[in-house]
Length: 125
Image (tube, rainbow, N blue to C red; front, side, top):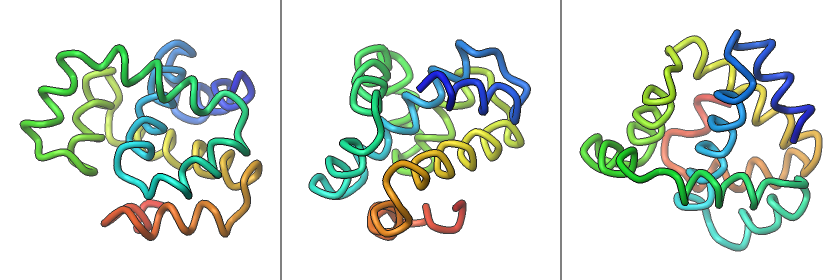
């Protein structure tokens, strides 16, 4: 995960702690929105993914309420990332780095299966 955090901080211009939280939020989103079996396989290929998602889920608190008001899905994800202080450009850079990293670890097929099952996600990959 440290390699991914460093890549995101450099690409998005965000602080490493914000990048770490953003990774957790994105992985938590995949856990909640994606097909369970495929997400489990994907997480098994990416060391630290399950832990990062769990940490984000445990610390979401008020952010979950905000995401719920935004309707969940991609809008809820954007709301949670905005709450971390990320702008749209930073969100895009973060997402690209997360998915590039996950592809390197889990392969295109697994990432494609998860992305295809989440409405609207594939347009951002």
